[in-house]
Length: 157
Image (cartoon, rainbow, N blue to C red; front, side, top):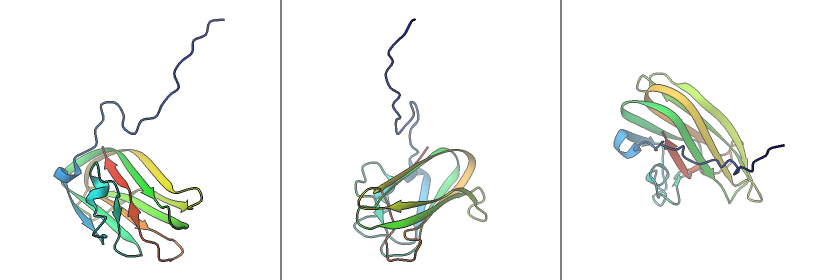
């Protein structure tokens, strides 16, 4: 019998040769609110340690309006909640006609618990062409509680 020991497969946050798009240079951002200490730039740009946080409770929308239609292959969302137990829902969708109509990419719920599940990372592999708007709607607590939406990071490629 012949055998060979191989190194374990390691998943990387970025694929070789793939770089995140420069959102700052490609898009305008619309948001329903933001905490002054946690602006949206902290979630969209590398090095934004604390991420974005809404100014108050309730459903929040983050919308990227691209100057020119984009081809998207990957959308990475990273949420973190260490303080409160809650069920969050997000809807990620896109438009090819400047927001006149939208198509869902994902709709997901996640249960945060300070005793265990404090982070949700979603890595959506997509093949979208002609994207003019990318929209993320976050309902921080589906039960209607006073939770405040936050987003550690949003990266697109």
